[in-house]
Image (cartoon, rainbow, N blue to C red; front, top):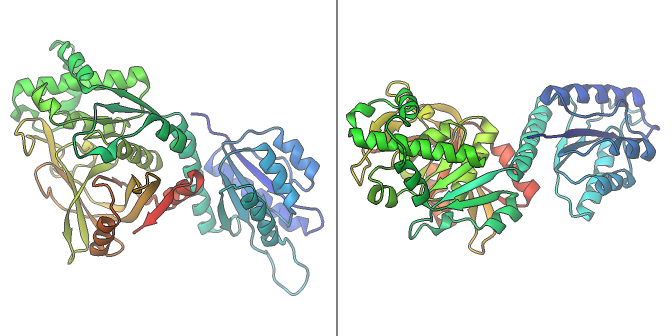
Length: 444
């Protein structure tokens, strides 16, 4: 995916240009350390004509507009006429306060720029501070990642395999709705199409997939041999379809079809797909899969997908669990990702393990309000060192805020029962994402 970033440093020549030039040089250095292809003008843009000439050379997917000095609203109006992308407005700190002249007056310029953007109905992110401040660098990095995710959504094909089971309608995605809100293309097929394809594969066809699975999953030999081979058939069917169709994430129907029509669960296939950077949710939860995709893109790691099933007020922890489809890479090192039988159907292979500790995690969900508008659930904490809590896969999160209050509020607010646990603190990125695409962010 191509992703063009542009630095747009505006100002006027009547302020202290030595100070402005120092900030300009430092800003370019930092932005290009973030992305070597970050476009920047050869010099500061101190006139409307210079700004217009530079704008003719760029077509950004993300723009950092910086008030090097004060610049009136005409500068931002020119920018808004010629670019349409996520914008970060950057105000510089006054370099010297000594009772003499105002060197930059960047902050007043920011008010002019922001007033224009609000007048245009343009949402934007904002940061205040000098280029060498850590909090400024951190903010810019988060907003850059969010803008990149906005662009990534527009090239994403999300696959719905089968319909949601009765009572799980919260996971359904309408193609026009997903396209309008996120820019995501939703494709749909019936589960039987992949089941029928899996049935055509011979034992010889599935050897590479079986060998790969044995490297990822411990104890497959303990599961019925026919079921293991049929699992490898499903793995091949899903993997080949995903690659052939350019699928970036998927939500798959699981029960009852894969037990009743095929005789083998799809859980372990979904777990492996997650580790292959194809975020995959079960129970046909399309917005669960999209949540996992966002988490994967922002952290570079597979996310856990599951239900909140247990609360421990004394430890201030929440346990998330599912039947056995977590990414193998999340398994504790002392156990690895183990093969097992489905907790209700007693058919395998599913995955059995507790997740390893992680210093920072984010609990995230793309959900909907009762009126159908979208919202983001967001809270953070750390994954603690706990063994498997129940049959299947589980992760225990010690939350930063009160776990009891999180549960109380989340239930009262009517959130869906599926959440992603992202391996890292992506709260700033998600807040910026919500701002850019106009979705309410609910912090807990």
